[in-house]
Image (cartoon, rainbow, N blue to C red; front, side, top):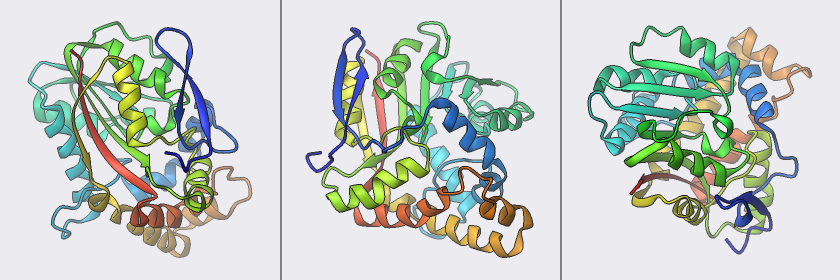
Length: 300
């Protein structure tokens, strides 16, 4: 990513730093900042985005937003290929909708982690046998080595303050022969300086993303953690409708939902600038400044 003017040092498995070309906002959020973002905007996320806090996947274009969100969950399940009785880890489980569906659909045990107290409260209230939610930072997860058969991260790696450690921990908790599936917002390899300055860096800052890596960054960091790439799919065209729908719902909420209006317009709302990222995300995905990728790695 020669056009990206930001470099970030991350920990390596051997203890020394490695350098990857990632988009880094001027003010880098901590895990506590990420948690505060989701706690403060909890009402907006649930009313505007729904129980699945991730993009939708449109294959025919005729799906509703809810059907598209479920379709992305099904796509992740297809890539994971879980077997009954296996242990799965949901890295950044949000409200637990994906984890609960996987547990019920495939007869697996799913342990989900989130830093958000609001998300954890909703996830734990689910009547979902086989699903356990832990409120904890993935980078300090305390989980046993080789505990899981499969792990997945749907749009949570972007919030990790240390992506090297994100992959190192995923490799550590997977058993040999295990699988990791990651859905991620990615900086375009050919992003221009204008796109970095006016789209990607503000998206990181407003969305509380400590950094945004490219496809090459993710593949390099995963390889360093000892993971073998099995498959990569760029599904940007299939998911980009998400943000147009979110923007339309937000505008509707500003007029018709007193709670949304109060949250969006109150000076006390520290994370209300995320509203500005909605049009940026629409433009970034449509111009190729940002991509949406689905990775599949196996642990040898």
